[in-house]
Image 1 (cartoon, rainbow, N blue to C red):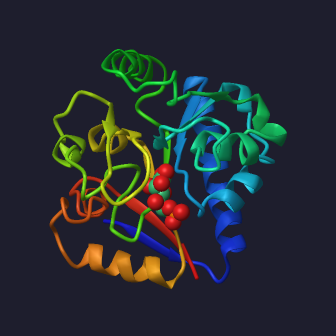
Image 2 (image 1 turned 30 degrees about the vertical axis):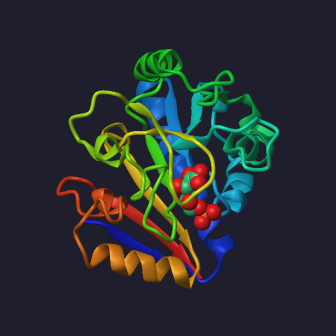
Length: 231
Ligand code: 6PG
């Protein structure tokens, strides 16, 4: 069962989500001595990152990664890594480790194999996953239009990271698979704006996950996605 929480403003949402994440990461550190979180890129999470970066967490025990990354130079305005460096890996959170998805110039099968191994060894399953959603129903870089969508949504896929070439969005991408993301302890979907609520409603009212990949999370029988929405 998903949970839907509506906020009056984006700042209220960001503050509430930052507190929830702080509690979950602190609890994971208490239990296991370490914690991991994957965040999404795009425009929605910037305010959340700024609040979260000031949270009182033992950040030295936290590994942060991205649910997906665009294969662009790290100084590109489209780089999610840059977004995280400039907004989340600041203040208290500058002590956190960052698991880089963009490694080297070419996204080769060797790079993917190395990253798959490293992610399995140091990161997964994630304690916290913050997803975003595009207006076509994509999440992470699991795009409905891409040739890799069947592999990306395959629950039995043992490759935790895959290369994706979206047809309706710029840049080659690297993304965690649905199988690896859905193993996360706590899954959040962070949405802002009326358009996103319309898209969410459409996703909840249909069941073809290849048409709208976010449905794989929203309709999974044993997953509970916590949806945070503000206008
Ligand atoms: C990316 C993402 C992607 C994003 C959605 C929402 O790198 O593009 O991680 O899945 O979360 O496209 O993006 P906005 O927040 O910009 O609407």
